[in-house]
Image 1 (cartoon, rainbow, N blue to C red):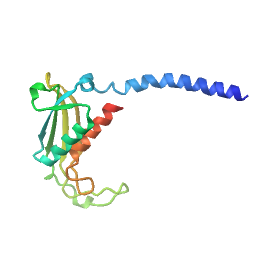
Image 2: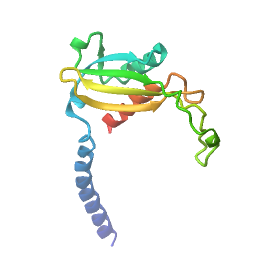
Image 3: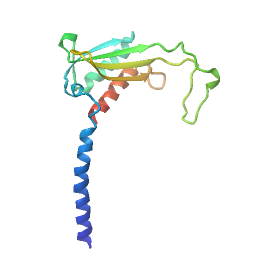
Image 4: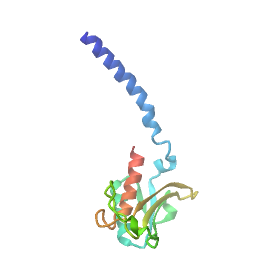
Length: 157
């Protein structure tokens, strides 16, 4: 009886492992191959805040997957960190409350940070992400770093 159970469990494990391998390979299907194979990148900070760009650049270098070059001409990919000022858009002042998710709705919406990754040769957009500009709890300069981490997680899946 014990041998039968062990045999059944072994068979399930072997068959299950074979089933999940193709699923693991499919996780990168939504990312362009160029993003997965490139090594040289040019980083451009268009936020107007050196600390935010510097934090993102340090995170990119700490990751170690890409080598940051000083010229667009040498790069395979171009990383652009930018911001769009949305602080003038007013939210409904009556909507200022603590909700069940414990989020606080500010009267003025904070700006977002955007990270785009383009192919340096074709100009094709390979990846884009946005993150709410950091604040007191998350760090004022953290938006770029968090975007690099989001890209890292998607590539390393």
